[in-house]
Length: 276
Image (cartoon, rainbow, N blue to C red; front, side, top):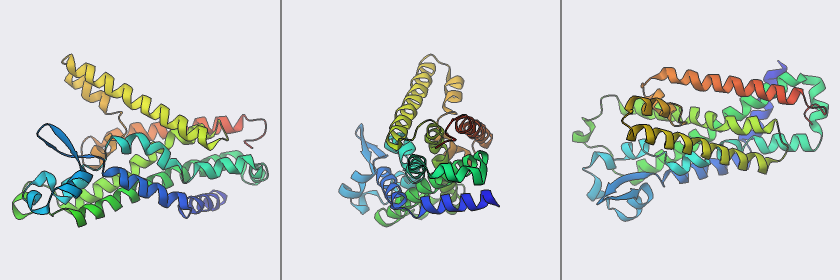
């Protein structure tokens, strides 16, 4: 019961805060920087398609339909800024709780384990909600700005459209949870929210860049299978999991989340000031 009350309070504090709406809007805006198509060897972003390409010019092309552009909405900027946006609703509030000494009075009543678990769950859930809300807003904009599927282009889709939309939103939610893991871990080491968010951004970018480099080198060497196996550790691979492609890979991220929770619990328990 104590855990439920803590989680309810933490989640409410994260979701109703202005940071939640701002982060969701920013994530949705970043979706427009994703690649919409390639024209004469040049990458065209979704924003450029919306501003400079008339509807009648793209109405007959499946790759430029509202549904396909919705699926293509996760671009490189969404990826690298995801740790910051997913952590903004929860991490600054927890850091303030530690800085003002309120945590000293809270821990004797709820124990370190419950406080860590509540922080962990609320941060991951609010991070998932931020990404899903921003991606959903982007989807609504695609529905308004771009032509829908025609009878001919709809035949290219095997599964119902509503199922694909729900799978993408579920992937966005899980992607937001994955992006929040690193900031949550760093929250056990520092009280400075700026340090946590910037460090999470730098480490997340380094991790993704390392996977890109390793996968490309394996691909150039002809090791196609190993190259694809490396990309299974890429954060955006969760979208493919919810689309039915090797969903067992979600177990890897669940294991990573369990490890982060254990490390957070260890960091908080070993502090002489009881996490305050």
